[in-house]
Image (tube, rainbow, N blue to C red; front, side):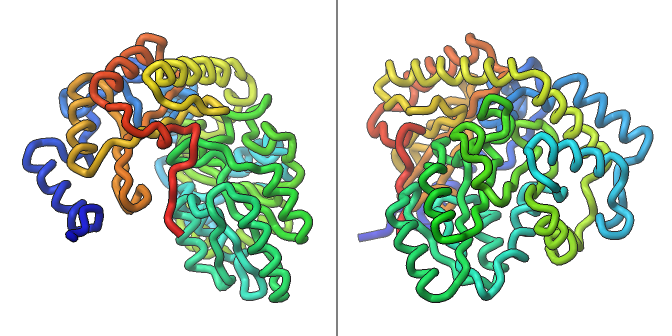
Length: 406
């Protein structure tokens, strides 16, 4: 039987979509006609593909901070942080972020992907890195760059993690457990209390990528650790300023010794130019807004609840946590791409995920809620989903993990 989900079939589906004007990638965004909306090559749509969860990217204060830094400091540091790329704005951002996250020190990176690649310097030969199977691609690449033995545990399955931790300890290797706080594809939370407990029992290091939860979860916005009350069990936090902060760049937060090690040994950061000053200034201003305006998280939570309530009425499973990320399974590749285009033409810009970005055999449309949306936006998204996305399989909604092969 022909492989209907392999790379060749997916490329063929993308070619067909290109011929009919439905190719979804690298579409030109030509404007932002209103908060929570974008113009996509002349089509006005609700922006349901953005990770700007708190709506800070277009906040006038964030914009002015970036513009002011550009006027005063220029567009680039033109060098790595080791030599000429650590400016006052970087130091201020690192210090305030460390204070916000209750961590001794912070390393800044030009992108979140780069921050995660920098973690490779922690994966030495005497360690075994045991990572959730749904981690970000940047973390997968960090594993490939490191020298540690790598194992993957079944998504959010502590029992499997426990077995792999026992194996690592039996081999005399120091374990490192790697997971995300909120997973980027399905929006579900890591079962962090159980993962932290197991890691502690085996005297391991726990690294959590907080890209999709820091800024939006927890009473103060410090992410999944604060949400579950186990922040003290996380040894290293990595993250990005491109999501809830509405800016750019990434970071690693941890002990002073660990961060200094990453600064001086982490090649991905050490040999790259620093965050541009306008980007650092924007992130710093966004951090202060996140710290001082918790009502933004409340708005996001209310809108996410509205979306999940509406999806439940359409027959989708209601998650335990109303994540701002919702992933809907949509048939095969051609059907997924056709539905994506139909949604755009109906005024909703979603994010399509095909293998390898999605697990093999899964074709998904991801919707993201932001605090820039209105209730009318959410209601229109629900109307379009009800019209165009048949409720065939509800297990792909954020309530249940999306299956991933061994």
